[in-house]
Length: 180
Image (cartoon, rainbow, N blue to C red; front, side, top):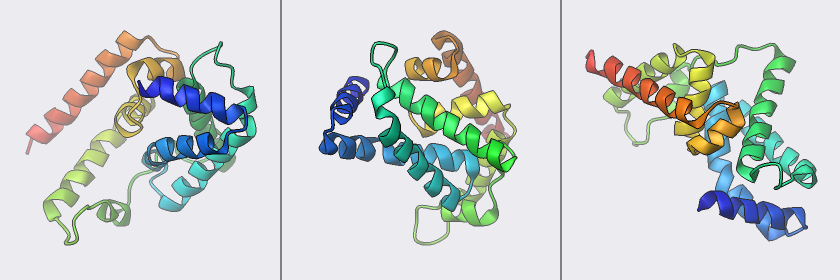
């Protein structure tokens, strides 16, 4: 299980294993960046905050106690708190709107695909209309790809409640796209 593997890597990192630290970074970097980018909508900010999160990991790995919880929940709580701190420092809006440039930059094809860009804009509009806790659940589950168990630990909510809430979010998105 990935959760156990990450916990073992964290324990090795805590004992000074630099290869384990590199492996943790390789495992988590893309998910952290995606999570932060989904919350900020700005590449530069996402890069800076992702780097800050990993620097905090290095600085605070000694504080991680596997007896109090899993590494995954500890790490994602730290990532979440880093974002909260960022917005407190900046007095910013908790979820920025994606601009045309950011949405266009998300296209995966060499040639712009108008339908994909429009679908992406529509998806971001739907997600932008979610309540803050719904957006956070969406981002942790579908962007960072955390398990419901880990999300429950990060958000402090029951796992079953989160599963139902995630299904409702998926249904909201489906309904919006069926309107076409």
